[in-house]
Amino acid sequence: MRKIAFGYSTRCNIRCEHCVAADAVPDNSKMTLAGAKEIITGMAAAKVEGISFTAGEPLIYLDDICELIGLCRQYDIYTRVVTNAFWAKTPPLADIVVRRLLQSGLSQMRISCSRWHQQHIARENILQAAESCRRNGLEYFISFVTDFSKADDVVEAWLRTHHLKFFPEPVIFSGRAAAFDRTPIRTDYQANCCSMNPYLAPNLDMFACCDAGSHFMRTDFFLLGNLKNTGIDTLFRKSEENRLYNHIRNLGITAIASFAGFKAREIIQYRKCELCEKLFNSPRMLDRLQREAETGLTNWCR
Ligand code: SF4
Ligand code: SF4
Image (cartoon, rainbow, N blue to C red):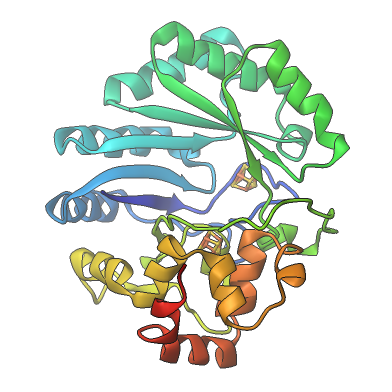
């Protein structure tokens, strides 16, 4: 299934310390509405079945996003909006926005919550946004961004107390969070396979990865091209057919690192995206892995 994180604009109304979206592209870049509609029409023709409106805070442009969601509905494309819930200051205000999105055809809302977001947005907004979704029949979930430190226990306890549907999501130490201290991780030797959602930035650069990968600027490993000069179907095919990307999806980052000579003891000290960066944001390592993609790596399986 083809799906994509759609960066209509990188503008945000707050400035979270951990924001991964920051720094890769200028803070305030934005597509034109007409341009975004044309792209969505092209995506429908390329059989894209899911679009997640993300990047900065999409609902700053509520009217535009509603129009784009409406267009997706015409093409039967599943839609999600990722939001910090700044608009849910009271239950009636939350209902106004949720109902508009629902009437436009929104399929799902993903509400971001973390100790960093909540330095700027009242926790009640999260609750009011979620309750409005429940009341109005819009599917939602809360993305609980965490570094798995004790400091987040209080956030998790609050989410549980209010019976909110939430999923923990690890902080990605990229963008602004690149400067964060890393808390030690304790985990088994995980495969670290990654489904790799593509990401379209407002300047129409398309990346094979919607998270840290768009920051791998030493190699631009995940940069697929720009929609101004390459068709959407071609860019998707590049993402789907690249041998190394498929090893990331199927073999997993851990096995690739092991193949590359990393000790098992060293591998477990890295988070998935950090290990990915070690492998694919180093020109020398990337060159080696590209040469081995069809041969050694393909045979590196149990
Ligand atoms: S994490 Fe989300 S809400 Fe926070 S600054 Fe980044 S885009 Fe805005
Ligand atoms: S592991 Fe690599 S491909 Fe997956 S999200 Fe992280 S940076 Fe992107």
